[in-house]
Every structure is written in C-alpha cells, then in structure tokens.
View 1 (tube, one colour):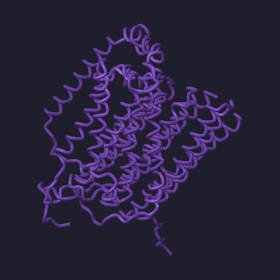
View 2 (tube, chains in turn green, orange, purple; view 1 turned 45 degrees about the horizontal axis):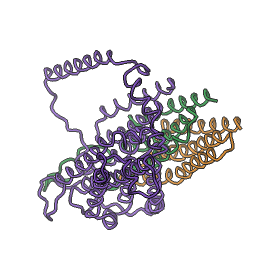
View 3 (cartoon, chains in turn yellow, cyan, green; view 1 turned 135 degrees about the vertical axis):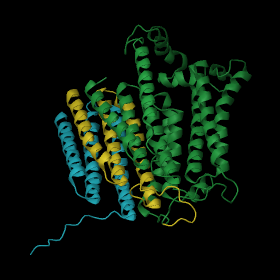
Length: 102
Length: 108
Length: 340
C-alpha cells in the first residue's frame, strides 16, 4: 500500500507539472490565479498522502486544514484585486499623474 | 477495505487528469474555469475520502479522530472551493473577459 | 525521505522559481510566488520538519501573498523596464554571482553529511533534548519545548522583532492628517466593488470556525505541530478574510486601530511579563519552574508546561495584532479609509 501511495503522489506531481504550464502561459493574470488555486488544493491532498506514507497522519492533518484555509483566502484576495482594478494585463496603469488622460 | 481505498484514489486521479486536460485544452477562460472548479473539488473530495478510509483500518478512538478531522477538511473544501471559483469568475466578468464564440461560417 | 516525491516536488519548485522571475507582470509574479511557497512547505513536510512547514504555510503562502497583492494594488503592476544596462555591468554581476556560489559550494563540502549521526550536534545536543524533554517539561513536542523553554530568550526577541516590524510599517505609512502629503495618486479604480452576497455569506459563516481552529493550534502546540506563531497568523488571516469580503470600514469597527496596537503591546508584555514574574519570584529570567509557587496545584515540571502555554498565548496575540496592523496600513496606504 505504501508504494501505491507513493505512485499516487508522483502522479499528482506530474499532473501539477501540466497545471504549471497554464500558470506560466496563461494569457491573463486571472488564468494564473485559477491555476494556483488548483495547485493549492492538490498540495493539501499531497500533505495527507505524505502523512499516510509516514503512518503519522495525526500530525499532518492540522497543516492540511490550515493549507485549505489559506488557499481560499489567497484566491479571494487575488480576485478582489480585479474587482477594484480591472486590469487584465499589466499594460502600465502605473503612476498616473494628476491631469493625465485615460 | 484496501480495494475501496484503491478504487476511490484511482477515481480521484482520473478526475484530476480530466481537470488538467481541460485546463490545457479548453479555448476560453470560462470553460477552463468549469474544469478547474468542478473537477478539482470532486477529485479532492474523492481522494480525501479514500485517505480517511485508509486510516481507519484499526478501529480505535485515535484513528476515529483522525478520520473525523480529514472529513472536516472535506467539508471545508466543499464549502470554500466553489466560493473561490465564484469569486474568480465574477472578477473575470467584471474585468471584461469575453467568452469564446464560434466564428460564423462565411462561405455559402 | 521519499526520493521519488522529493525529486518531483523539487522540479516543480525550480520551475515555479524561474516563472516568478521571468514573468513580466508583478501581480502574476506574486501569485506564482504563492504557489512556490505552497510547494516549499510540502518539501519541508516531506523532510519531517512539520513545525517549519506549518509556519511557512501560514506566513509565506497565506499572509505574505495577500500583503504582496495589497502592495501591488496600491502601487504599480508593471515591471519597471529600464534601458538595457551596459554589458560590463551584467558581466561583473555574473562573475560575482559565480564566485559567491563557488565559495559557498566549497564551504559546504566541509559540512558533515546529511543525516550523519556523529556530528557534534547529533552526539551531544539532540539526544539530550530527545530524552529529557518529556521528563523535564512534560511536553511531547520537542520543537515547542526547545523554542519556548530551553531557548525561550530567542523567541522573546523574535516576538519583539515582529512588533518592531509592525512599528516600522506604521512609522513609514501611517498618515494622520486628512490631506495627502505625497504625490503618488491612488490606484486606477474604475468602479467600487459591488457587494458580493455569496462571498459575504461564506466568510461570515467561516470566520468563527477559522478563529476556533487558530485557538486550537495555539493550545495544542504542545502535542502537535503548531504553537503561538502559526495560530496568531491564522487569527490575523481570519480578519483579513473579513476585510476583503466585507468593507474595510466594517473591520475597523470590529478591531479599531487603538485596540489593535493595544493587543500587540499586551502580547509582548505578556511574554516579557512572565519572564519578569519568574525573576521576581527568585529564579532566573524565563525560568518557569518557579511559577509553581504562584499557580495552584502544580509541581515544577507542570509549571514549565503552563509557562510555555502562557508565552505561546502572548506570541499569538502579538502576531495577530501585528499582521492585522501591517495589512491595514499597506492596503489603505496609511489613511484607513478604504481598502482592497
């Protein structure tokens, strides 16, 4: 059963590699937020799998719960940025001088 | 008991594979969001259920507490992940991400 | 130490690190850095260092990413494109990096092996902690006992450093007058965010449980990974969740600035106060065994366990207050009127 769990962990890591492709090549920043949400959830699963391989799950479950929490908070915060700021790409709404045009 | 754990884990892995393929191949942000939000949540739920059952192979109180804690993570992901999906999709709609439409056929 | 998982997670981490540097958009770089932090914590868990992993998860992957996003919201998202530097500068930088790396690698060859049981630390120090912790302090978690009891002086200064960081952010960013004293205009806002019913409902339902979980992490730090820092950061993150789903003013009504700074002070004072109490009772500073004179029905060993709990509570309160204070200052640019 241990080798099956290790194989599951490696399979999840390989699929996370494919998710990283969307993270890097996502055309807008919102694609990246979505992909990082997926990475965060899968890291929670990987934590419990590592705990099961070490036969000490009781230590790792608290960390997994904290992970799921913080993943949620980071995703909601990152999407609130777009509620206020409406820039999909970073084409320079940087320092806006007073009196400049749109 | 082991057979159930293996079946649930493989099912979770299959759904996650479908999620990843959807993330890579769908043409539009909103369809990718379907894949990421739904497939990710379901695969996480299945795999965590499998791990909760795996830890329950000896029926004593400590194992029961650990299994209940893992089920608590399941409940939390069930509540929080669709909310995060809604937050991202709402932000994308407010920012003006346009849905993908099929080009109309010009010929004939 | 599962080498298959080690290798795969390390590959992911290296790719994330490259992506963070190469992406030409600061917001995306901050988000990918959050993913890097998640995976780094996974690596530390796999090596067996669960307390470090917990702290990295809560601080690095959680609050740090939110603070980056808040800072990018107030400043710019564009990577400053300079005219290409001269080739000589780049060549000198490359040579300096290579020389530093080579020096570090040569020094690393003198270190003992990775899990060598015959290093001085493993021969004299670790066996003492491993065998004597439960006997001296009745706390099974060796990391907590080393952090809070055997090396409690260091942890007190760590808490003071966190407090100083909060003070520094207040000193730099906080503006008390009504008029703006700087020239940088506000962020480019097209419209205010509409109130979102789903996120508000879920946040309102989840925040009590998040805070309960944070208190559990603080109290259970003696028996499982956790402790004061992690619990305090999760408490601060719960207030940040309220601030980003509701209005900024609403959270200011719950946790005003005065109450926040007061809580930060109380946290550090609690830690130093317990140490001072031990001094007043006749023992060394932060020697908790003398607290058995004040606490009813404890012997000297349980008094150390209770003293550790007291300082963990102090650390949690201080860290929570400082995390909230830094977030408030960064996200509203010191003016405390509206935020993310």
